[in-house]
Image 1 (cartoon, rainbow, N blue to C red):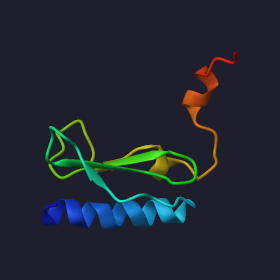
Image 2: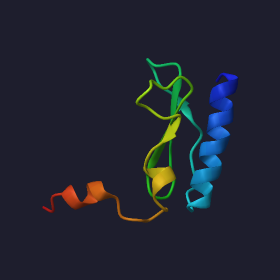
Image 3: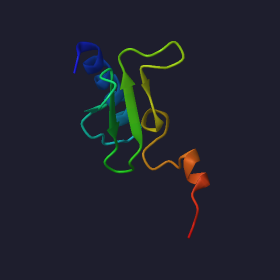
Image 4: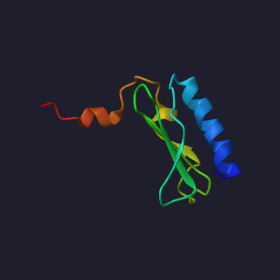
Length: 82
């Protein structure tokens, strides 16, 4: 992991921890080597970091930095009950 990704991972982990998440270690994207992702061990919400975001992208993003652990995701509204 390069220095920029290391810095972003620290920032992302801190932000996620502040929302009650327990994040797994970051995993490098298999194709895009400037991207890494992590999921919360408790709720599964994800955060991604990108050390070279395009002009319309951000360096840190995902539900884990936007929502608290256990908060309902807007995607859950589309879940189909069997």
